[in-house]
Image 1 (cartoon, rainbow, N blue to C red):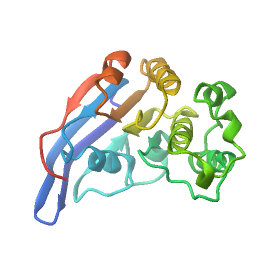
Image 2: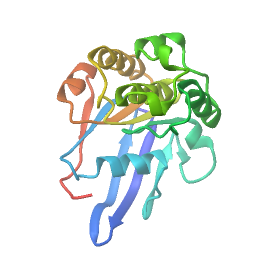
Image 3: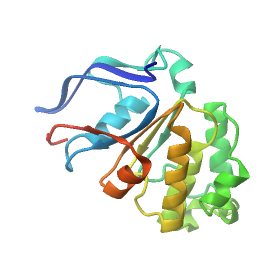
Amino acid sequence: MTMLLTAEGLCMRYGGQVVFEDLHLAFGAGAVALVGRNGAGKSTLLALLAGLDAPQAGRVLVCGHDLARGQGARAALAWVPDASVAYDFMTGDEFLRMVQALRGCAGPHRALLEGFGIAAYLGARFGDMSLGTRKKLMLAAGLMGDAQVVLMDEPTNGIDADARAFLVDQIKARAHKRLVLFSTHDRDLIALTGARVQALPARDA
């Protein structure tokens, strides 16, 4: 199996607390659920894998490219945070266009917008949206294009049942040739997507 995402010897500490010590992970195509109790370091690990934070030791490879060097790795990577990262003054369309420009990818297909129920909010400003609508725009931004590695932090938080069912379909449709790695406490999401479970040790983050 071709490895799409590899973590080699990751180390991360906050103060005197060790979050990861010499952590090694390797993932090929498929759906993978990152699980662990609150404070185990799921969000910290995803931030490292997405390149938002740099590990204190070790490295991350995306499709064979070192995440810390050049654009090769970042071009193959999409990231869906738990909370909105858009400015309140941005419209939904402006945010999606910004992500499209940053990633150099195609914009979302109409089916993606309609599946998440956000087509009507493209002209709305984030400051006027509900938390659920903001989250669905984050999901659409992460799932548009052809990224080989999609990372999602608690993707079902705050979304309605229809959007959740559509998300399950999107994960399953991508998993045969891409990696979709998501942190979750949602056991039904794991079962419905057929995701492999990757557990983290119980450490405080």
